[in-house]
Image: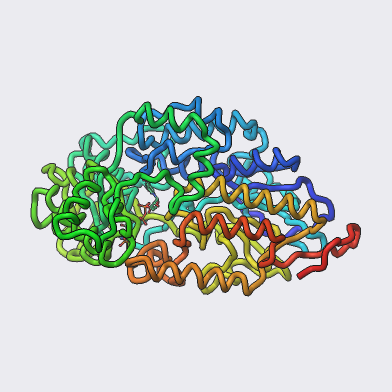
Length: 560
Ligand code: N01
């Protein structure tokens, strides 16, 4: 593939109103919402089908780890009423089929150019338009599209982390990445010696599946993570019927919660209200209910969090038979929630099988990868297959993968050199009419991403309609608003146990050289949503409003 890098002269006429990049939860809904508002749209997606993260992460065992009846669209009651999930936590294939179903029902598939990667996006102050270039391939020339509004629904976890291990490319066996799993064939592990590097959510889900067929599985773990029970099996019929009675009420209610999920009502008491026995009972009840982190109403406070962390550590060690393996699998170095916890009822149990071995890299680090396998400080482990579950250049990686320039030709890579800056997690100063759903400083991965996708796209399209109605060509936040939002994000992070002290992708710590900034807003979904509503209601007091430079349309309001 070759990449078109030359900047195109700014066109004065848009080809369409809105360009949406990405066809996952947010992108599909953005295309539909834009059409509903009478705007013309174009969509671009690098994959051959819709799905976004649920297209690419097709590794065995990939599934949602919040209930699918929550992790779904609610904007269309008929979708809620007609779609039947086969499992409380649906697997990847079913979620991708669901997204295809919604895209077809909304009739947006025709708007999307698949197999098309957007390589650059540049804003012209002269025209208040964005020019988007797509990468040319051997069979197809790149395309230039000019639009008024650009929605980058490119996901927070879509730019895979390239492992920085010496000799990685020399490995002679089969190599796979959980984040780009082959779609055209089933990978056969039967009788093979398989190494898996990485023990985050992807590693935890894929290891038990590989262990079903492989001769040997070697799990290379750098940092132990919390693994808590998950839900599974058919969805309770009564629960689903209640939810289907009034999906729009549920949609509204989800936005009033902390995390965008239906409240489970598990932790009834505050930590301080209970004696030692009461705490133990609450912890056991929450563990049995599959949500140990909800044992107490104030589970986020340090004392309660410490009790929850200890309890989960104890339960994890009870599951693993070999005490040394159990010790290494237990996360001693950070509190619960410092890293994103994993959910599985089979991962820890897999280490009780004789052909599965944990290699704790804290004791025996990887020195290099050779054609034969992985060399650690104490041994050479020969492998037929190597699976990388090494994660993503989260949140900013997908943004930097596109060459984005705003006012004065300023690059977003420069604007975010010291870490991302934006307002309400969606817009960046100096980049008018560029919208970034699921990006930095939004509730993103600490909330239900499907609830967030709908809420953010509603906010974005409401903002666009406001601009149209008020004859304003451009909107972007004031620098002061960004700073205020960044401070608020960091203030909430400081209250979250382990957020600022744990090495995690939440703060860019998994990528060497990446600025360490906590990138997730943890003030809660409701607070976030209320902030968005206030801006809309009050006419965007925290934003700069651009004027037309061609003076064709007279401004009715003074710019702030
Ligand atoms: O990635 P991760 P992921 N040598 O970054 C290790 C979502 N998700 O793909 O912790 C050795 O969590 C790294 O070690 P360390 C979810 O939000 C959801 O698993 O950096 N090891 C870590 O163990 C999740 O949080 C679901 O020390 C190396 C692992 O690789 C996010 O996606 C399912 C290494 C990476 O873990 C990312 O999850 C899957 C190296 N050089 C994903 N480099 C659901 O269930 C990295 N590691 C919904």
